[in-house]
Structure formats: structure tokens, C-alpha cells
Image 1 (tube, rainbow, N blue to C red):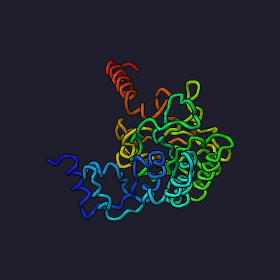
Image 2 (cartoon, rainbow, N blue to C red):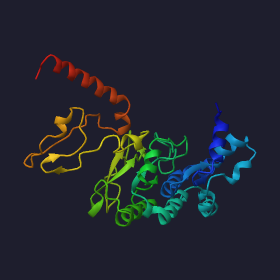
Image 3 (cartoon, helix red, strand yellow):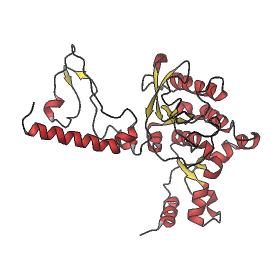
Image 4 (tube, rainbow, N blue to C red):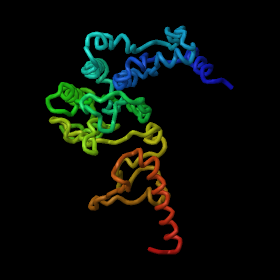
Length: 310
């Protein structure tokens, strides 16, 4: 059995280790959304300099060369001008986001907002929240499986702010040049935004969490998805969705009701509605505490059905 450092060194020594996106968590923490965008677009493994040196070399620095097949993205080089030219940290996320937009936007398939670790609850200055926690790993797997463009611009929805102007350009170009149409982004319609915009917590709530009033030219809609393993739970390989009504029948994998339910006849004169019962919050709850609610409700329904109640 290998311990953690030995396992990591074994992984990094293999000839098949893929290309990596190199960054330093301590130096690029606020820029992690941009690092993830680049890594996902390049299909590269994000590799933290700080963690690798500490785990493999005990701080000696011997592993700085990185034994991956190729360094496809180096945050220290890509964001060097941002780190050296800006006085203070205001503007650094804007410039880093703008840089990855220019290089990688056309390789992405949608938009996500993931907080790199800013203070959440009523910060003294909501416009400049401090980095007070680690960035959660939730939804990072979906970023890579879907190829999402990740942003988190605190001023992205603030009228007159340069970050809002940049977010407007990203969204417009994403729809027009990268075909961000999933969720209805075409023709100025609703564009789904994965993750969660939990900036600007004021008077008990996040002002822009719904996204709908964020931009002028595009009506964005929040898809609150700060949950793990969504790349697995959302894959069509688990259960093929009903794609269309073909030859008068629904075509898809049989649901829990069996083959009869899968072959139900489609009536074009009827409107079909599916309900997901929740507390009106987000997918994270649906995968945790509310899942137990569903189970209890299903058990109750089965008990009623057993006694023959219709």
C-alpha cells in the first residue's frame, strides 16, 4: 500500500501523464476561475506548485520541472503582467479573465460562476471582499466534462463597473462565437449559468444570485449547482433521456414504472408537465438532505398503493 506522497510521485512518473495546467494556489488563488477555464479548454490537469512541492519533495523544490507530458498552461507566465503591473488586487481578476477569454472562449460550451473563496456573509466592503476560505471543489468535475467558461467577477453585475462590461462581452461572444445555446441562450433568450453567484450578500441575501437582472443584452438564468459528481449524475450513459416523440411514441429508457411507461403513447393535443419537488433552492440540496425527503415520500406512496387506495 502506497502512502499519499508515494502515490502522487508514482502518478507523476508515468509516461502517460497528460498535459497539465500549472499554477500556484498561494499566488493565483483569486484567479482560480481563470485557471479552471484554461485547463478545461485544454483538457489539462490543474497542478498546484505549492501542493506538489510539499507532498513530493518536502519543500525542497526538486519537482518544479513537472513530470507531466507537457505544460500546456502556466499561470505564472500567463498572468505575469497582471501580477506585476497592478497596484493592489482590484482589476487582477478582470485582466486574467479577459486574457483567458481571448485565448480559450471559443473552446468552451457554456458559462459557470464559481467563487474562489471570497468572504460570503456581509463583508465590510461587498465590492472588495477578502479571500477568507479555500475554494470549494464542488462542480469542478462538471466544468471539465462540459468544457465550461468559469468566471467570478465581484463587480460583474454592478452597473457602470468595468467587470460588468467584460462579463457582457464574454456572454455575447460565448453565444455568438462558441454556440452557448444550451439553456436557451440563442436569439437573446435565457442563458443558463451553472454554479452560484454568491457575491454581494446584503440585508440577508445575495443580490444577483438569480442572474436575471445582471446584464442588459442577455437574460441569464441561474442553475444553482454547487454539488459534487455532477459529471456522473448528469451523464446520459446512466439513463438515456426521452429525446423526442417519434412515430407517436416516446423513445427513451424505461423509467422506474417499467416498459409500459416507456411505451406510452404521445398525444399532440395534450400538454405534458413534469414536477421536481424541492424547497426552491438548488441541486446541492436535491443530492443531500432533500433526497431523504423524496425517499420518505416514495415510501409513503408505496404503502398507500399497497392497501389499494386510488
